[in-house]
Each structure stands twice: as structure tokens, then as C-alpha cells.
Length: 483
Image 1 (spheres, rainbow, N blue to C red):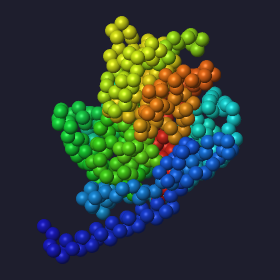
Image 2: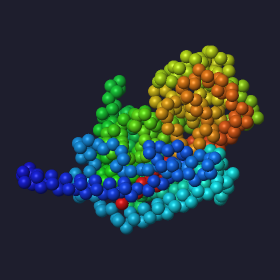
Image 3: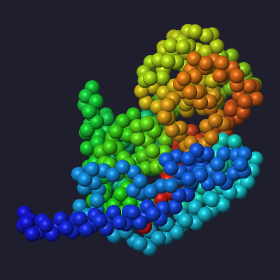
Image 4: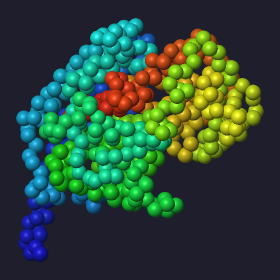
């Protein structure tokens, strides 16, 4: 047991250490380079506009990212992650030379991407068998340059701490498949991004599965997420005690991934994970703490038996007519679906809106027969219907509030989908009928071009969903200055 003098001395040292850490972070935040977190035309969370387009085109935005711009944790929460609270016994020193080399390389990448972003965008990009259709991107030249630099440089260290099944595993055959497939690829895939050299990594992946936490730790019908949050808190304590990487940025260069509805709640187990780290989430609700300046929206995909339904693999060619205007079938939950069914269930022969699909109809056949697929949010903002609609080449009609769409930092969703305000649901048929044939064909072309970005391939392929998730993380790492 410590004497009073020793305790007082330890308290002073802890305070001084905390002050030094805080000063270092403030200096880092002042020096931060606000480069490329988004290719969007809309400024997000104080982002400063910087146009690389002609006045008639959308602007390319460069938002500001600061390490200390997020909500600070309560003192008792911050104690779990401050380096001064831990013994240095298990923490090897971060090699300053390696860190400087990484940051110098990223600085060159930022300059290269900015140069590409400022150039005139071509009508199509064809290079080394890569074909980029510009219409679906905010800035196709910037995206392509960024993607190639990611392939060339980006390294991810996957923490080895934690035990199966909650860590290093995840679901691959249900509605949360995108969670498990990404974890499996990072753990076992033959991809160029994973590195065993933690010193050489740009980001650090915490491979726990919130879905498996719910399965193994949650007590049914209690709605008590405390066990999930406790697990996350313990995991952060573990990796931040054993390794030096979390503490040098308070987790800003770390990321987790979850497709479960409770993914955001689980991250609240550690305030820095929630407010500073990169969270890759299906439940990307900006009204519930999802911050698109640092978080990543993950597509939700329901893989029955682990595969895409065969009917969606090869949709009908464009010259095959689609007799139905629009289609939806799904349960009444959340605030939006009751409005949709109130106005359109059984009300119009052109809009096929059901709570329960008739027994003589097939869900995917109905998608393939329809020009538009209605995608209303349920309890949570994300829905697997969006990706299924893309596969079916059925124009997604987004009916949601506060949903940050997947990969919207680079993708122009208006090039392949339609957004309808909730207040406009009574006018839904009028809005869809008003879409001209030329506009409809343009949207279908966009769906064909964007499809590859939403495919879960085994093995993974360039530009597929695995790579687009990593690219979103890569963009946020580019926007962070470490050191």
C-alpha cells in the first residue's frame, strides 16, 4: 500500500503526464491537415469548402478534422485510455523514424490527390484495364488517384488480442453478413493491406463482433447493453495497455466495424472509441451520434446461406420491360413505414406496397418486375433492400431521415437512386411517374456502374465492397495528422 507522500507524488506525476499528453494533442489538432475526408459537395460539421470544379459543378469539400474536436469523456472514463494510467512494461516504444516516414508518405499522397482533384474530369477513365464511369462519383479523378494510392500504400494492423468467438469472428450468413465477411477477410484473407508489422501500419483494427456480443453476452428481452459496453471497455484497456498505438492518438487511427443495430451503443463503452475513433457502422444515423467526418457508413447485406440470391446475380437486360412502377414488402416498424403503408397499401395498382407479401408472389421476382424499389427505414436507418435493389437494377427510392448513405464521400447517390422526403410520401406516385424515360435509363446506367462497389466477393476483387470500406477508412486516415 502506498504512503500518503508516495500517493501525492504519483498524483502530481499523473497530472503532469496528462497535461503533457493534452498539450501534444492540442498541438496535433492545430497542425491537422484538412485534406480529403470527403468528395461530397456538402460541407459537413464545419468543413471548409474548397472547390476544384468549375462553378457549374458540385464543389469538392475539404472538412476540418481535429483530434480534440469531439466531446471529452468524463474523468473516470478517460482514465481507461490515458497512457499515464498504465505501466509501460508491455508497451514497446513507437519508432519515431517509422512514424515520420508514414506521415511524410501520406503528405505526398494528399498533394497527389489534390492535384488530381483540381484537374478537369474526363468523360471516362480507362487505365490499366480499370474503367471508371465518372457520373457516379463526386470527383472521379480524385477517387481513382486515392484508390490507387490506397492499393499502393495502405497498411492495416489487426490486433491479435481477444478470444473466439466474440473476437476474430463474425456472422457471414444473415442480415449482418457485411460485419462477419469483413472481419474474416482481415483475419484470413490474402489481401495486400494487412500487415504483421504494427510499426508500419496506418490504422489499427479491433476485430470484435458486436453481433456475437449480443449472441453470447446479452440477456434476451432485457434491452440492457451494459455487458456489450463492458466488453468494449475491457478490450480497449487491453490493447492500450499492451501496445503504444492507441495512446498516441487517443484511438483516432483505430477502427471497429459493426452491422448490428446496437453497434453505436456498444462503442459507448469507451468514450474515445465512440467520439474519436473511426466507427464503421450500418446504423449510420447522424441524429444518434454518427459523425460522417470520422465514421464510415457500412452497407447492410442479407446473405441467405452466405450467398446472393441467384435471381439477383444476372438481372434482366434493359430491353426487357418492367411492368410495375414500384414495390415494397416489409414489416411495419419504425416511424416511416406506417406512413408509407397508410397511404399506399392496396391503394394503387401501379404501386405494389405490402406488409406481408402474398403467398403466390416471390420477393425477388417482384423487385425484378419493378422500375423502382421503395427503401424505407425501419427501427434503424439502414436496410438490406438498398443493396438488393442495386443488384436487381431496380432504382432505390430512399425514404429515410438522418441516414448517411454508404460511401457517400465518393459516390453521387443521385446518379443511381431517388431521395424522397418523408413529407412527400403522399405524392410518391406523382414523383415517380414524373421521372422521364431518359432519366430512368440514366439511373439504371448508374446502377450498373455502381454495382461492383456493393459486391461481397470471395476472394475479394478490386473496387468491391471490401475495398470500398477500406477506402473510406483510408480517407479518414488521410485527414488525420499523427505526431
